[in-house]
Image (cartoon, rainbow, N blue to C red; front, side, top):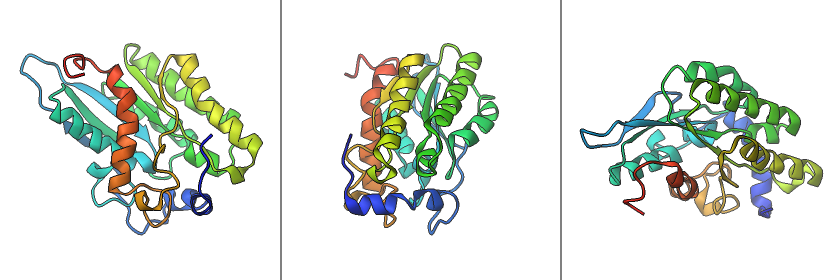
Length: 235
């Protein structure tokens, strides 16, 4: 497991509070509203990639939600002229329980690729990994029931070592277990290369800056591109 720098660990504990409403510079609630459509040939059918997550997805503290990693990926899709649009359904402060409560409403729109980024707030609140697993599985089950042909991607998260080794290991194991059970593509750790780097995070030490978000987007893109159609001609 990646070792977090001490300054990152101390500030990471404040994440739940900052994500739950104590914001100096909040991003707009972009739940199912940010809809960036890529350009495509007239003969192509534009497909929907939905990012379902918390403040990391929503773009907490950034000047514009489009600077968050889903927006960066939307720009990548556009530059490659791939027939996909991105919907950002991130809500700051969201837990897996909250996500499970609102997923039915989100699924009213057609989804071709579902990207799940939830769990960080569970970990920082010390919620049982068993409960987190239950909620994540319920979300996945609902997506699969409504859109059985949708591609599924899970974004893994970790908690800092000061949560205790037993909890740290059990929490980390939740994501590969869910991905394996559901045959989902997995990004092992969403904040790889960003967590613990002050220059890539906002003053709270938790949420990525615009520069950090670009690295996070690359972490996701490395896995996501293999789940998309029409990429063989590009890579």
